[in-house]
Image (cartoon, rainbow, N blue to C red):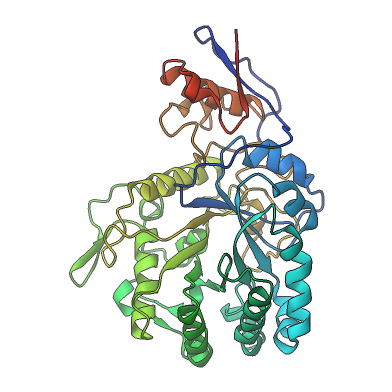
Length: 410
């Protein structure tokens, strides 16, 4: 667990940049970033939504967030921030939403329309990995009808041009036992429903959302090195026909692209709805390794290099998993599922992850696990990052705003 002891900030030149927590509102985060975070609610002691938004999301300049489910508190806290929002629809609601247009209209009214004037909605994610192999056929019949009814409700509310409907698909929705992207196909048992879903997505210009679980993949494929998952340089990349892969992420994206191509939808955009690494609950689940994964992923995405099958075309968006630990998450795949947070359940940073702008052109290595300032909790770690960015930019007044969260003190 991270230390609660706050170490003093290292000395800086005159002109200290401080964090101003819990402001009533903030300007929109930079729109250029295609990285967001997942915010789940499976916690026995959840942080107040306003504290999460004003204390974690905005100080880190998080441009987009994916809510696991509709939350009135979270949506109210996100109002006016400019943060792009994806709202999840739990699997338990698929059947009622599929069977009733009135139920879908009521859901959209209660969770979307009433907030639409102040919340920047981007997607509605229908289902929570409904095609997961462990679910069998339980949710399949309801996925596309539920998505279609949600779409109809958005159209009736005159919101369909602003908000797209997507369906999160687990990585086991497609078969790729060899881990070679060229061999990937959708599972035979989901082929019919997948064809209907892909037609629905294509007709509505919606992307395909895939959920990646690199840690589970690492556990299942002992022949692949940890370096492959952490974006470390490899002397022997994985060869697949004429392509070479030096990391799990690109190989996974191209596996999705291959499956989509085989299904007749080669041009469909891809969103990564989940990608993260746990810090506890299993061997190789540590803050240091999680930081290596997150740092490698964010830096890789920043290059916008794409993949061998889609050069210069990275996923439209990628959502890091996850913002906070959740001690009530299902542990069927392992206890580590409850330890994916960048922050502990009470908002203490477990490691540094560059999910915003402060360290993009600064140096926050002192915040790394075991480094001199690794014991800084919030808001000390944020103040350090803001301060460093400000100093690295020659104390320029333009570099001290941070969406209204910074202030120059004489």
